[in-house]
Structures are given as C-alpha cells and as structure tokens.
Image 1: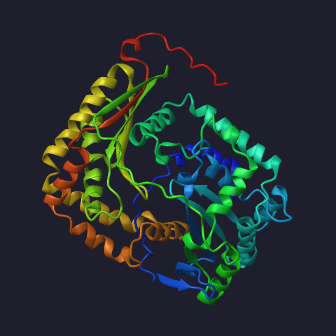
Image 2 (image 1 turned 90 degrees about the vertical axis):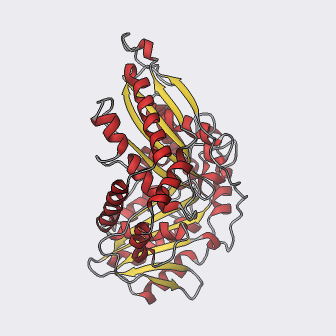
Image 3 (image 1 turned 30 degrees about the vertical axis):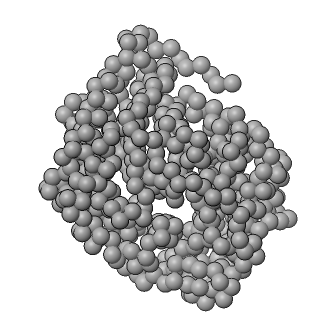
Length: 453
C-alpha cells in the first residue's frame, strides 16, 4: 500500500509536477487496444498474462492549477485524503482492506492533472476496483483525517524552508511564471495550507473528478469484457462533466534574469532554465534531443563535461525539458561550494550560450539519437510503468501507436532542426536562481539555520 504519509514525504518531488518524456518498455510491442465500455469509458489497454497482476493508471483534468488562488495545496490535500476512508469504511478500516489484499491505491496532484494509480493481484481485482470506486465516489474527508494530513503537509513545508533545493525550485517558478497558477507550489505553502477547509476539499473534488476529462490505461492479466465491466462499475457513477475554470496560456519570463536567496548552508544550489516548448509543438523532438545533448543527465553531456569533468566544480549537473498543458520550460540544477558558485554559473551560462549560437555537432546528434532509441526499450520494464507511459501518451494527445513510431520521429530530426531548437531555447540566456551563502562569506564558520516556527 502507498500510504498518505509516504505521499506527503514525496510531496516536494511532485511540487513541480511537470511531465518528462517517457520511453517504451521492452514488452511494449504487445498490442495496445482502444477499449470503449458499454458505459462510454475509454481506456488504452494491454492484455498481458505474463504475471497475474493488473496495473491501472488514470487521470482527471485539473490538477494543482485548479487550486483556489489563495489556497495553494488544495489539490494535494484532496489527493492525500482520497484513500483515507470512504462510505462506511473509516481510514483505519479502509487501509486494512487494502493491506489484507496487498492492493496499492494512491492519488497525486500534478500541475494539470489529478492522477491515480491502482495495482493488485488478479484474484483481488473485484475488491480493488470496488475500493477505488468508493474512494472516488464517497470519500469521507473526516475532520480528524484532514487535520492529520494537514499536519503532515505542514511538517514537510517547514522542512522545505531550510532546504536549498526546495527554495531554489519555488523561487524559479515564481521567477518564470509570475502570478500564473504554474508559479504556485503544488504542495501549498505554510501561509495557505492552514486555511484550506473541508468545504474547500469537497468543492475541489466535486469540480474536478468527472468522466469527461477521464483518461485510463490498464496493463495486466484481465480480458477486455471483464475490464469493461470493472471500468463501468468503478467510474460510471461519477458526474458527467467537470467544472474547470480555464487556465491561461503563458510563456515563461524572458531571460536573462537572476535571483539570489541567502541561506547559511554548506552547498550553494543553482537552478537555471529558460522558456521551453509545448508537447504539441512540431519541433518538440528536436528540442528534446538538444536538451539531452546539453545536460541530459548522462556522463557525455556538455554540461557534465565542462562543469564536472573539466573543472571539477560540481559533482553533478543536469537539465530537462518539461512541459505542461499551457506552457513549457527548460530547467536544470547543480550545487557547489559558495566560493565556486560564480565560476559555476559563468561556466553553465557560457556553455548554454555556445549551444545556442552553434548548436550540436553531427556526431553529438547521432550519438544522442542512438542513446534515446536504445534506452527506450529498457526504461519501462513493468506493467505499472507501461500503464503510466500509456496514460501519459494520452494526456499528451499522442497516437495510440506512438510507441512504434517514436524511433522514426527521433531519426527524422535533422542537424538544422536541432540547431534551430537550441537557438530558440537559449538565445536569450538563462533564468538563474542561486540559494546559499554569499561568496564573501564562504570562509566564515557555518551558522546553523534557524528552526522554522
């Protein structure tokens, strides 16, 4: 079982709640079916009897972008409470039912989507789907559970006030998105989470959890007829339509801009980035490839070579192209000693500028393509991971045969397209957030950070 406490502990990992490009697993060649139930529920489905397991991933439109403006973290609280009891089952009884059958049920709030996950043994499918149905249609939101979850969230938020990576990411979002909903942290703030009421929680659930925005992906040992019945029983009782205020399109703040946050910690954290590209942009794959070449987290990336190997400034540096429904950004991170922060920033900035002006070489492009094509068959090796990928493809509005087409899409990117993508991403420079000790204070004794109230 994935408990609420564990989800809270991972809350900041989901604070950005942006999307990364997932690759296909080795068994993804299995036929993907477009299932439509008698009740009109649609799902992408892979029947796989290799092991007696069923994995389902599902999502509703909305996510943290639908939080009330002065109550960031509402979606996160709803996600943390949806499995804390339902109908006549209180939280303890509900979790005992999950534990007894080794059923994994969880929810999480991303930027644009309210997602859920269900995993069970084949023999326990009826009970698992019924517990999911209850959590979706009759969550209890008991006051004792609400306050317990709120306390856990607030505890995590207090820890973040002294975590340089958390501070850097929050500041970067503010710098990039201003007063847009994407600037607000998905897990909320110390100022706003205390004001979220049970009525707010119920209202969010009523507005967001509906059939018209539902996407479903299922992988496992179940036949289409049985799955159709389970899906209708589980989701059929939900409201027909969600009530989602529109979220405006936004382009991240134009670089260059820099922000410094003073924090007395041993390592200075540097978060850098730029306006990105949306998933439906025809030049998306070219941009994805050049971000991999620049700082894709591999030992062959330019940033790793220049910042880590050549100068020994950091232990690691990487960047990713991330996207949401209404925007996209490039974001990277590294950490170094305070007295080497300026040199690190200058090196990153110089390398990004060189990529923008010259683009990648043909050799770099060829090697990146080879890596991306080869790694896709190794990345998703379980039913749960495949289900997650199939759900993401739906949310990204990709075709059902995208897994088969992806290598051809990668191969089709030309050197000129890659150079144009690099120029578009980084010609204006970087948005940079630095959190740590001022360089002139680097030689001074480290003073423990004050405890949060």
